[in-house]
Amino acid sequence: MLRSFLKTGLAWGLHHSGIGRRRSPFVAGYHRTADEFPTDPKATIPSLCISVKMLERQLDWIGQRFRFVPLDELDDELDHAHSQPVAAVTFDDGYQDFYQYAFPLLKRKGIPAAVFVVTDLIGTAKLQIHDLLYLLLARSGPPEGAQAQLEVILAARPQSEVLRLIEALEANAEIETEVLQAHRSLNWDEIAEIHKAGITIGSHTRTHVVLPNEDAGKVAAELAGAREILESRLGAPVRHFAYPCGQFNDATVEAVDQAGYGFAYTICAHRDRRFPRLTIPRKLLWENSCLDAVGSFSPSIMGCQVHGLLDRFSPCELSHGVSPLEVHPGSGLASN
Image (cartoon, rainbow, N blue to C red; front, side, top):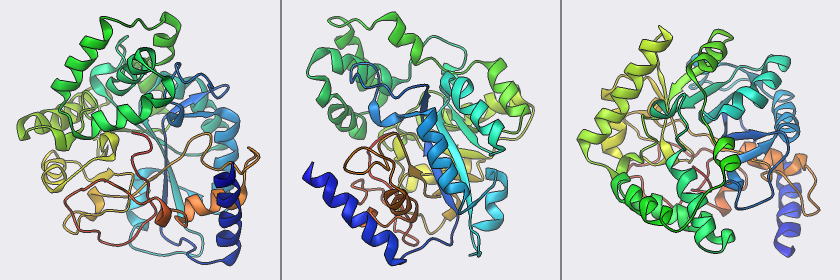
């Protein structure tokens, strides 16, 4: 509680000081959207979720200060500062709840957005690897510690090891049907509809593989395969990519370039001097990102999140193997 009050006071002071106000583009990142924010830690990864009400509140705050643009228009803004900077909105993983909850809100407000999809899961009942592992960990021990365990595992282990761990956990834990259904991915008809409505469809690999943990062949197959599948189904070029778990290094940035992507998005401040447009920072937001000490939406905290004023107190802890091009707002591995 004391930490919450200190954060609230610090955010108020920083926000009203006027220092560090952003003039460069802001890219927001979201994951799951729900009618009501889920409070059961065994139901889903909390920091990947946001309620429709809170999503609207955050987007309204951003829209009063930035001009929303689709990702394809972001390129023209990256190298310039404007009196009214621009913002882009993205959603990772391609959950079906985007179609159910976020898409109607975005349409009503006329806000462009992008969805980064995991192609091998589209139209299937399979869960994202991180969701499946989290749900099993939350049923095999104290659920409050499941996310910390998840982050440690995903940070360093190749996908093959993660899958073996999942198999071992499945022998002793069972996930309820309704929980599995709540995590399902978009299907191709839904993707076609949102794409036709102007939503940018980007790649998030074929299987949500954490690229630096894999060999070069696996990385290339995941990147090129996802892009080829999407372009074949959409009948349009796919230029945008988001790094799963925000993890990248020199080799994976080069692989993204070789796979033909023009833009790629991270979740921290590190940028590759050789490929600045393949290491574009985003700020990941969720239900509690902008709550004050009493649990209410705080414009001051929202402002500090957007302008990156709190990032110096929680810098990215990952070693990306690249030198920062410049300081940008970012995030640690708070969520994938």
